[in-house]
Length: 135
Image (cartoon, rainbow, N blue to C red; front, top):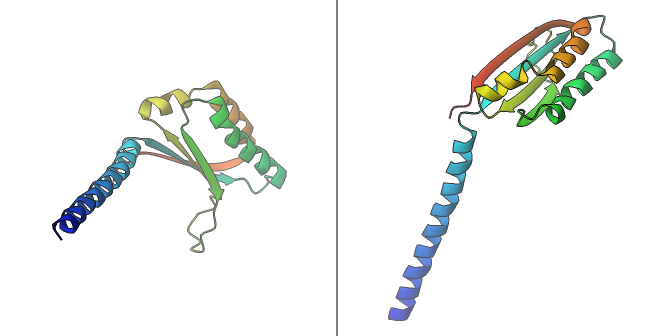
């Protein structure tokens, strides 16, 4: 009986250690994301922008992470909200940088400038918001 009790205590302790280790991993993942800088870009195209022009802009923006090492993560999509509050903005691009320094390398980068030149003829409005990730 004593052996079973000791074995039960050891196994329960091992489970607690495994649970704590898993909790530590989640905390480490969260802390790695803290301090990251998110660069949110919303685009509203001119009414005269043809679908093929918009596709070229999308492709050019999607190519930036391969050309600019400071971009750690990139995602994008088009508005699907049923609320009709987008004020004509149809495209959202979200770039993640390690910190403000990464963003500051991105802004004057020749590939970013080149993208801006390709975008400008089709752009009605742009809205940019940068924020530091906090939890």
